[in-house]
Image (tube, rainbow over all chains, first blue to last red; front, side, top):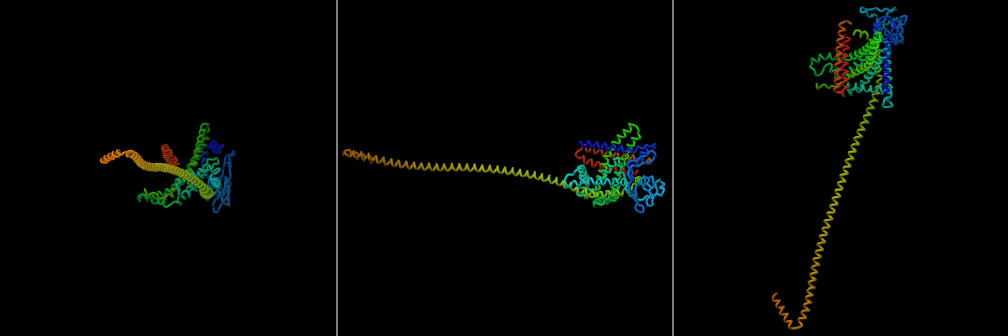
Length: 359
Length: 166
Length: 63
């Protein structure tokens, strides 16, 4: 009972701080249009950045002050170019590295001349040369840290089994989840015979997505799973594992569907083949879209508090934001669950044994 | 869609792929395998313990059933023995009775025959004594009778008369 | 965003909303009818809802 109470209190505090911190970042004493500013802030918040910004504001002199720390920029431009992102200065100055000039424009690094001139094409897109960017961005750092966190969490849990059959500490909380993934996701969908091969991926993907989603709700302002590149990488792994572990039966179902007349088989083959790509594609879009939509809605409602500027509207917005933040906590876990569940479903179809003779 | 493709960051994709694959492999070696193995071992242990408990219960039941059976058998045996003993007793009594009867009959028969022979002997004796007595009496009578001639002739005549009748 | 795009997106959202709503409603009915199978029903419901959602999002991004 005590634990539940303190957990509730913790959740409340957590959400309050989240909302407050997001809100805090938006209060810029500026005369400009608040609505556009909030919009810009939200779209900026959703993007990956080359530095780890915690807080930024505009001071009285009209200068942008960024609080945070720079991260290494790694570019492939006729050789490896490594420099600190402080040189880019949030796109406000041109970085000079080994005689090359780079400028940050809308979150991307472009190669420019010494003046930092950006040329545009007819669609008003930057037409400068874009070097291959392998920078350790904020999201890469967060991915790395979350990986480290998961590794330590489960490494410790694994160690606690050495002396005792029962887990200790964190393991007590984590073990039911691990068992849930094994007993309610992997085994029913993949089958008892093959599930062990996929457990590592399923467990890692579940905890990775869940923790990183939860981290997106903290005031740190990190958003990893709302990057299409991240979800694409995860879905690609699901696709590759499905494809490379698939048995004859799986391919048989795709190219020569059993139990239908042959003209149908010819029609079905491309559809089924397309389906194998659509399945992981829907995975990546779902995760991306849910998290992005959640962040946009939550932040818009927090932004509404400052647009209303009266106690009724603002407090209503606050209540709504509070409820939505709770919903987002659920969504964070739900999306991780669905990603894992559907991955398991696809793996299961890949290793399914032949049993359609009766059809 | 266009916006999505534009937003796609190759660097982030690359890092995510690399870090995630490394994470999966590391976790597989250092976390998932030991955890799942330990859990499985534990579950197996619990299963084994439950099974052996079930087996022990079954054994116990069997043992109890055996005991029950044994008890029943023993009871039946006892019953049997008692019945047998009773039968033997009855038979013995029966036999003894029969024997006693036979003995008694025999003894009675003996006694009867003894009585019979005694009786015969007694009768014989009595007969001889009676004869002797008769002879004595007769002698005496005759002696007395024969002391006078007249009487003798009379007697002979009566005797002759009697003898004619015989 | 042009007007047809917005209208299309709205239609998609309505369609997906009706679909997911129906799934949720039917699942609840099913749970009410067979409370002991609620775990299985929930799983099936989530998968079905996720599939519709996926189509909805795909169409939304295409719009």
